[in-house]
Length: 294
Image 1 (cartoon, rainbow, N blue to C red):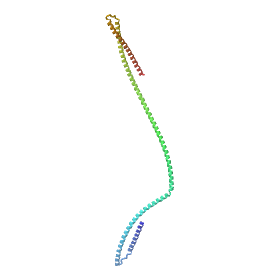
Image 2 (image 1 turned 120 degrees about the vertical axis):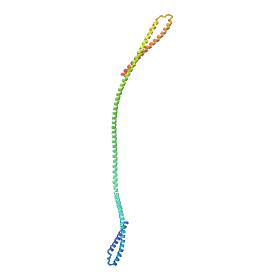
Image 3 (image 1 turned 30 degrees about the vertical axis):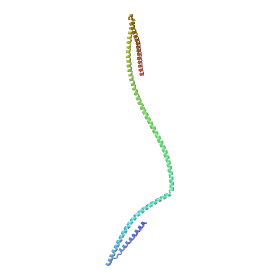
Image 4 (image 1 turned 135 degrees about the horizontal axis):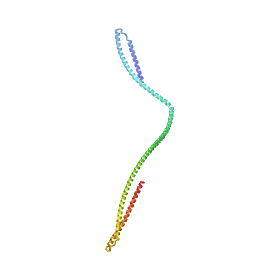
């Protein structure tokens, strides 16, 4: 309403300006010609008055024109704002119209949506079942693959283990052969050393036995000489006066003889025992050597 009142006021002013301009034009065209001096003076005065009025009128016209121009600019801006608001209102109305149409068809659309939702649910259930079955198949395939990998790994490990066992057995056989060879060499050396030791011991014992035998033989020979001397003394004829001394001497000789006889017998027995022990030792040595050879 305000824009309409402003536009009406501007039009009224334009009409007034037009009327004033037509009055000025009429005055200019209807101005009388200067016939005499009096008329010219009156005409000059009238012209000055008319010019003043015209100036004032022109000033009013300019002011009115500026006001009209400013009002037109304001009205133009308001018109643009009004057009923008009208466009928005038209767009909003179109949206409301579209919403009303959608609401009119919403029941059918809802039915279709419900049907679509049911189909989507069924499809989702089928997809879930398919995914579950696929997951089971994947798990089964993964399990079988793991079992195959484990069996392959187990087979490879067993092969490596058998190869390692074979290699170690070869090393053990080589080491055993080496140790057997070293043991045989050691046994041979030990047998030689034992044989040398037994021979040295046997020779030493034999020499000792020979010395003891010679000593025993020489002692037996000396004892036999003493026995023959005593026998010759017993066969002598004793004088009466020396009989007691002889008896004392003979008694001492008999005691010595008995002691010598006992000693001789014991020495002979010891030499026999030593001989038998030496022979036993020699037999033991020979048996040990035979055992070592075996």
